[in-house]
Amino acid sequence: MKKQQEKEKKELLKSIIELILIVAFVIVVLVFFPNTVIWNIVVLLLILSVLIFVHEFGHFLMAKKFGAYVYEFALGMGPKVLGFKRKNDPTEYNLRAFPIGGFCQIAGEEGEDDTKLKKDQFMCNKTKLQRTLILVAGVTMNFITALVLLFFISLIWGNTEQESYIGIVEESSPAYEAGIRSGDKVVGLNNYHINTWDKLTIVTNLKQKKESFDYVILHQDGKKETYTLTPAEYVQFIDKDTNESKNIRITEEHNKEQILAEENLKDGEYEVVKLIGIGASATVHKGFGNALKYAFTKFISIVSTMLLILGSLFTGKLGLNALSGPVGMYSVIGQVAAFGLANIIYLMAYLSINLGVINILPFPAFDGGRVLFVLIEAVTGKKVDAKVEAVFHNIGFILLMILMLYITFQDILRLF
Image (cartoon, rainbow, N blue to C red):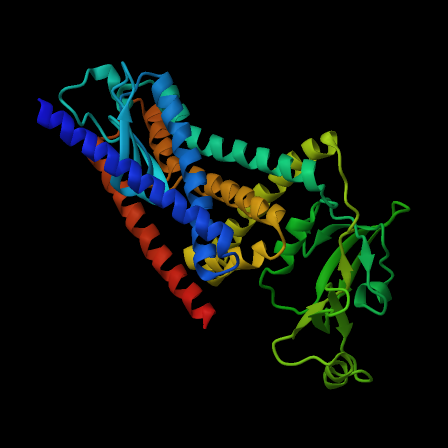
């Protein structure tokens, strides 16, 4: 007995030391190695870990509420570093070695899987409503997290205009020449209804046969007009004096070579882009009420644009190369971090919504796919065989892994 207790104490001490070393490593990297490869990796892992942990915590809370047996709730993956059990609670709470998400292992996710448990402790034996609430709780927690983060961003730093009101119209641009002015609002583009800058950006990047774009503009006097605009070429660069983005239009009288010579720009310091010459207002709005409005407006905008992206992938208006995996997100971290903490928090909110939207899709292996089987049971009045459902989820998981490998390969190619 004493030997067993001494062994457990040694294991606990070892686990605590490992935990301290992991935390110390993360702190050292964050404080002393900013904007490096290792810093980007650590920040990305921390963001993904928090979001996946929040997601799994939602499943955990609902499972506990409805009396489903939870074997383990873990932060991280891989070998166990530190673990404990609470009094009168059978769940094992573990911290695992690799800070990549976490998991909540619930009894009966795929049928009665433990002869030692009572029938009512299996998730599969709960009511259809209870199972649905357990399944959607993870997504709900991701959405709540995103709303809190967006509210916090606006409350501390403020926010710019979210609706598609035009704040800037560059002189001599196609938009200016057509008669579009600051204060007008874009309400349509290529037969899509437009109400936010997020949606306007996505629709602008959808594949189309012609080079011109059909803009529906609501003028300040209430008059609505449609303009067919062809983007002009611009040299885009960061002004060395103001450190702000600057666009200079390329024309026959003022060609690219002349612009590069005048601005003393070298390869890698500029890019040639196509623009119609409109932009959002840079005015910053602040206040508690505004922050609350921004959180919900931005949340709805991001969800709608994500659904638009998913629909466009199926219709072929967007290619798979528009998606990013872990490697792509790694490269984004460095770019976002350069613009400050607010942008990192925004990325976290965006990824939290992304995780929620993807997980609620009615596709096998996702939470939405599992909810779909509950709905099938509700319609037919019969339970789907646990083995049949497991096969569907396994097939879905394999397809997702193939897609992830393809996206990761494309991300790696873009790095070189």
